[in-house]
Structures are given as C-alpha cells and as structure tokens.
Image 1: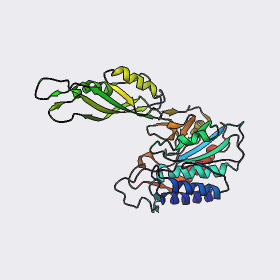
Image 2: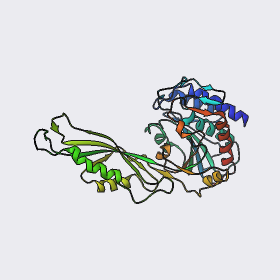
Image 3: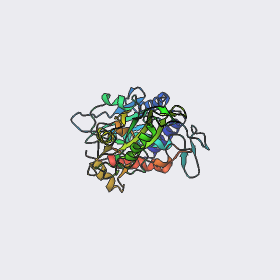
Image 4: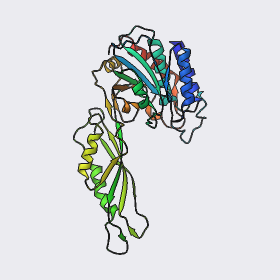
Length: 353
C-alpha cells in the first residue's frame, strides 16, 4: 500500500508539472501512458484518451470501468503558488493546478487498478484516463466509448470527499429569441422585443416541472444572458437570451425542452446541445451498498462530469472537495490520496456487480 501511495503522489506531481489545459493534454497523456506501460500493462490510446484492460478479460463477465480525466481548466486569478509547480506544505497539502480536480482521483483510481488487476475478481476491470472533460469536448471520452469493451458500470473519479454521488445534474443551454417590431423610440410605434421578453423571463423564473429527483430536487432553469437593441433611439425588433437548464435524473434532456416550449410558445428555444444528460444509479446497486457499509454517505451532485456522456450506469466517487475545484491555490492533502486508494481497494476487492 505504501508503494502504491508514493507512486501515485509522484505521478500526480508529474501531472501538475505538465500543463494540460483542455484540448492540449498530449504531454499529460504521454505521462500516464508511460506510467501504465512501465507497470507492465498494455495501453491503448485514441486522441489523448489512454486506457488499459486487465489481462484476465472475459467477455462473459460484467465489466467495471474506472475513469477520471487528465485535463484542467486554466489557472484562476489569485494563485499564491505557481500552479504548475507542485508544493507540499507543513499540513501535507499538495498544491497545484488539477491536484483536486481531478488529479488525485486519477492517480488513486490507477493505483487501485494496478492492485486489483492482479487479484482474482468476478468482473473485468478497465481503467481510462480521458481528456477534454472540463469542456465536454467531442474528442474526449465520447470518442473513446466506441473503442472500449462493453461496460456495465463505471466509477468516475471526481472530488466528492469519497462519498458516492448517486445522481448528477445534466446541462442544456438554450438560445432564446423573442420578436418585436422596430420603430422610432420617440414615437408611439413598434413593438418592443425587450418588453415582449419580460413575461417570458417571469414564466421561466417561476416554472416548476412536475417531477423532482429524490436526490437532486427540481430541474433548475436560469436566464443568464440577455441582449437586444441596436441603438438608443430604435425600438428593438429582437431580444436574444441564453437559458441555462440543469436537468435531473427525473428527466431526459429532451423532456424539459418540450415543456419549456409549451410554457413560452412566443419564444423560439434552440438547444446548443442535448448530449450532456443527467445520470443516476440506484442506492441498492452493489457499489453503493458497499460504500454505505464502509461509512460513506450517498448524495446528489450539482456539478457536471464525464458521467453526462456515459451510456451505462455510473457513480461519481473521489478524494478532495468540489469547492476547491477551479479555484486559486487548489490543493489535495496527501492523507486524502492515501485514504482514497485504500477505500477504492476495499470497495473493489470481493465486489460482485
């Protein structure tokens, strides 16, 4: 266990030292690929997604995927440390961009994979380090999925304090347009598109869809941007808005879209994408039941991950705290990494899925 821990920390320090902003992860993928190869496992790669399949793969058995991502956001303003220089302080906090989101999960899951790949299991084991997670890019996990063996369930490494997120909100961004009629602002003419938009905004603000998730609550609808008018003396003939929809496991993305169109028929609603779906897994799934026995507390997560693109069941589970993600002086504690490796192994050893 100590050897796995020190290898994981060393790998995380290498990854922190290697900038891997979304869509520019090749160097980080090289590091992960080399690490796995040096451990005696064969890797496969597509774009900057790297995966390995335990040698005892048997297509008659169920398959468990361990997944986390290698990309990071850009450094936020206000860093007191160099975001690309790993530093450990007196409290055993390892600072560095991507340390919490989601480098610690990545290296801990990989350590657990290396341990469990050599043990007898009732299931197949696959480890995938994916790219472009932070931007939900099409060259990330979505491109790797068709190349993987059939997956039955996945553990997705994200900072959850090692509590299982059994549901995750999806995302749908809508471009909204409301028409008016242009006219001179000095005369009583035209139809002001901004005024036409006001009841639409109020309707969306108070709209509640009938089904609510047991863990995530209601679908969240927010008007986040608005733009109208060409100059001060022209009544605007068009008002454009952006609507942010956080869907839950009570719906697919297409269902709330249909209900919104019914609620505001005077407004054209065009989704930028419906591919980032919500996800959920039963509290009675063997993974969740075992984590509960280990003392973890299932919860619903409001933040998006690669779960949104997975066509199979999944649970989000990893070391760290989501509140540290995307912040200046992001960090993970070394104790959190050690605990994560031990917990992942305790979860996987003897698991029946």
